[in-house]
Structures are given as C-alpha cells and as structure tokens.
Image 1: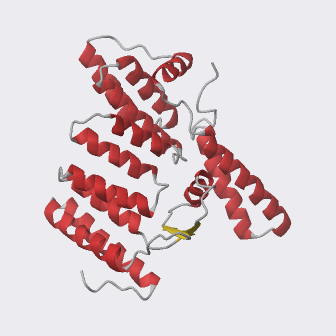
Image 2 (image 1 turned 30 degrees about the vertical axis):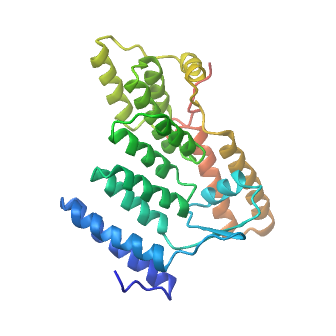
Image 3 (image 1 turned 90 degrees about the vertical axis):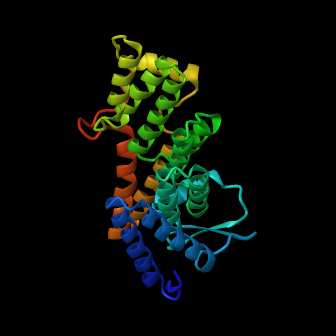
Length: 290
C-alpha cells in the first residue's frame, strides 16, 4: 500500500477506516477478489510497519470495549507483562481479512488471519466463533470447532454473543445427529437472543430431518442436557463477577466525585450487567426458575 500514515494516530485510524470501507464496497458489489486484495495489502502493511511487537515486559492489544480489557486482565492476572491498550485497529483489519478469506473458501489462510486478529485483541469472542466457522465451512466438525466456541464463551459479555456460541454448539450436535442436545442449545439460545430467527430455523430443520414433531424442552431438561453434553446454560461467572466488582467501584467513585465521566462508567457497567441477567422486552430474568 506504501503510503500508510504512521506519524499521527488519528490519520492512521482514518486511513485504515477508509480502506476498510472500500473493501466493504467491493464486497457488496460482488467483487470478492478485489476486496481480498485490498485488505491483504492493508493487513501486510500494518503488520510490517505499524503494529508494535510484544516483548517480555509488555503486550499490546486493541480492545474495543472496556470490559474486554478488564476480562483479559482478569484471566491473565498472573502474567508479569504489562497489558497496553493501543488505538491501532489491527484486530478489525485481520478479522475482515479472515472473514473474506473464509468467503473465498481459503480456510487455512482464513484461520491464520483470524489468529492474528486474536493476537491484536485476544478478548474478541467473535474471532473465536469465526475460527470455528472455518472448520464448519470446510466440513470438518472436529474438536477444534468446539474448543474455539468454548474459548469465545470466556468473552461473551453480551447475551447475543453468548447466544451465538450456543447456536454454534447446536449446529455441531445437529451434525453429529445428537438432536436432543442440538434442540436444547437452540432453545437455550432463544432465551438470550429472542429476536433472532436463526435458532428457530434450525429447530425447523431438525423437525424436517427427523420427521418428528418437536416438543420444546423445559429449562430443567435443558440444564440436564447441558450437564450431559458439557455446554453452559449461563455465561461464565467470571464475566458477571468482573462487571459487578467494577460497577461497585464506579458507584463509589461517582458518589465521591459526582463526575459526569464516573456517571457514564456506572451506566456502562449497569447496562452490561442488566442485559446479561434480564431480557430487553419484559425485564424478567432471562432463564426461568426450575
């Protein structure tokens, strides 16, 4: 690409955004080859000329949310390296690159690009899910497919992220003809993402495939199935614990300062906690009591 600005972070971010927009425009127009070529050049350029390298003392990541940064710090609290949050959106570039390579059926290259995206932002659940998609798309429903989904769960801090991972496990069980587990996954995902039609579409597919009338499992049946097949019914407790501890700290800070910035932080963590626990429509707990 050659003329990437490296002196000013705002110019750099604007440049990267402009190239990503061109890539999306070419993709929407059906020109996948040009889209891949453009994002490949950008990815190579920022990797060689822009992104800082991790060393023994510091690692550099471009988290997109405060909760991603906090969760990554929590899961790596024994690390002696300083975690430095940078503003260079390398993870977005490599994610775009990996997604386009997946579309181009270049699965190994897609996986490599997505792993680089995770190097830039290791707290991105969607990158783990997209790596799983590379196995799915190539017809290889292997243990690595499940392993990457479960890695993504560690950073599934919104109900939609958790639901997507659960639906992906449902697809795995469906492919293995373990339809009881698949059905429970799909029904569970609807508690977390009721607006999505994808789970119901897959349930309809199971009904068509088996020729049987589908009965909706109860929450107790879903929990029993989850224990049998080793999948979660709730996002990891570490996520809610992390949110709640920082919410408490933010409330204490705002009580002392009455600062608008501290108030926004309180709102941020309150919304995260509320959306994980309660649905957006009836404001009732997402999972009914047994």
